[in-house]
Amino acid sequence: MQLLLFGAPGVGKGTQAKLLSSKFNIPHISTGDILRQAVKDQTELGKKAHEIMSRGELVPDEIMIGIIKYRLNKSDCQKGFILDGFPRTENQAIELDRLMAELNLGQLKLINIFADEEEIVKRLNKRRACKNCGSIFSLSEIQGKETCPKCNAKNSFYLRDDDKEEVIRKRLEVFRNTTESVLNYYRKQGKVISVNGLGSVQEVNNEILKALNN
Image (cartoon, rainbow, N blue to C red):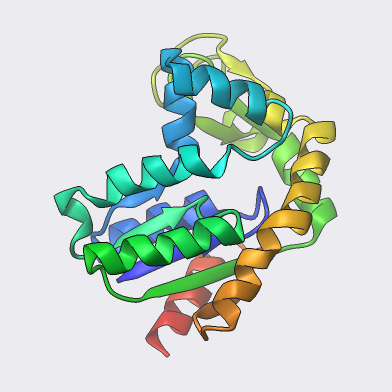
């Protein structure tokens, strides 16, 4: 099973990808996680990516395609995978199709998670990250806590640049102007499943599983 988790920033793609990864025992490949690790490690890629992401812009296609090609070549992707955060441009989608054919990886299904933009802004602006381990939490998850639930670092929570309101709105604008062409690209191929992302995590997951079963 090869799945693409698609939708605007903040609709819950990462959360759903992790649940589906556990359900189907296939790897969750998050380009966001890969890039954030590169930023944390201060690699050349990380430095370039950080500058671009802090402005709410997309990392160039050639960097992203190289990352994905390297990851899909690993043996754990032979039985399937879940892509989260890629492709983000029509050119990336075309290159991914070529790569899938080259690696003989089968057919993709795109799960489109949609939500109201104002709700997305509220949701993202209420997220906090841990400076030590990079984990992301909602304010409700860490309310009253001084230590990170994942790594136990003290006083490590902060608001990431790309979760600030002005950057969120820029990211949503980029999504509308660039990334939605990806949805149309896969729609023409009959590969799109659409699910409302404003329910609870479990409600959204149930809808995804129901659509996949159908």
